[in-house]
Length: 112
Length: 112
Image (tube, rainbow over all chains, first blue to last red; front, side, top):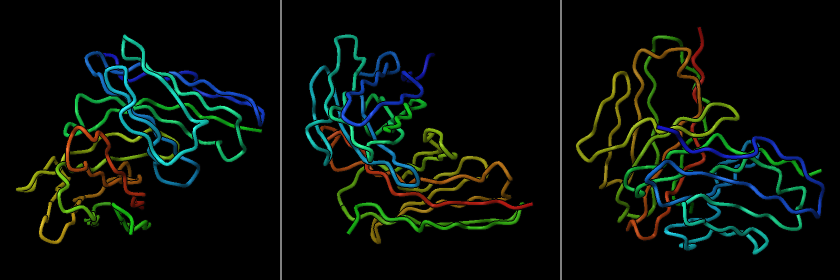
């Protein structure tokens, strides 16, 4: 069974640009979660999508947005990139939180 | 107060020794509990769920104390490969809220 896949693995952008990160969940999982992990820090919850709808978002500005497609894959968009957006962005999928999450290997975003 | 708190460590453990550490959570209505393991610059991976009666998986034992609102992880016969950051994870009250809350992690370093 394929796990959670994320692309690209690495992304380098210039301050002010936009970044688009992609995630494909495990087959059968309808929920997709996005987390940000800055270097040396813990996971910060960004967004939760389920059945194509945004269900919850963390304490991040509106320039962090995303969507979920009919096939349950998801996209995270970060507009007007700032240097402090440099981090590992992790996508996870789940049948339900009581089952825990399975994470993808992440996209490492570097803003220069 | 953080929703999930962990001693950041590091816990320096001789190979073959036992190490144990706790995690406290603030929401008494939390439902599901997990331990994840994260290696440096990699994605978190589910180590084990934590059940009310406590559970064991090989050298790893997890306990839940609802009265005092903490969970614990014990690692017996530590291996060099056990060196990692261990994340305590708590699910909030209902699945519909959808979010797992991650602690910042406890670093374990197993030395030869």
